[in-house]
Length: 155
Image 1 (cartoon, rainbow, N blue to C red):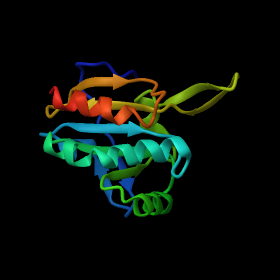
Image 2: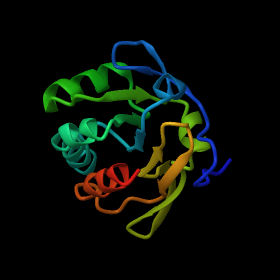
Image 3: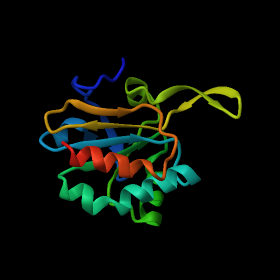
Image 4: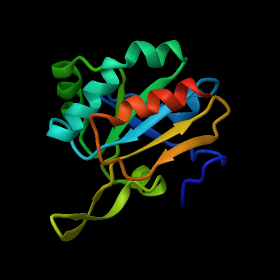
């Protein structure tokens, strides 16, 4: 399945750091930023998460929520959230099923070597559940959240 701007975002249910089930449809009525990242506590992922944290007030003022998704387990997410004071939800996708549906799991090239892995990407879902923007391959993790905020504010 591919994610297409203007089409409905596929619903999903994953577990958060506390073990609670969270569905995308729970947030209908407000914009949702779903960002996919490879691993808690790695340099790029930490910079991206902290940049979303630093823009949290502006994102909330625009009515948006942020959801981070990685294959890490609940304990890892809990430590990551606490250590970096992340105010948003982190969900675990250990089987990479949601990531696959959203195009965030696939072949990557790193230092000329191809492998399967998490593709850093973000999907902006509007209040009606439609995909408004899909950043397929995020290259500058630290700067990316500011671009996402601009898109949220333009809704």
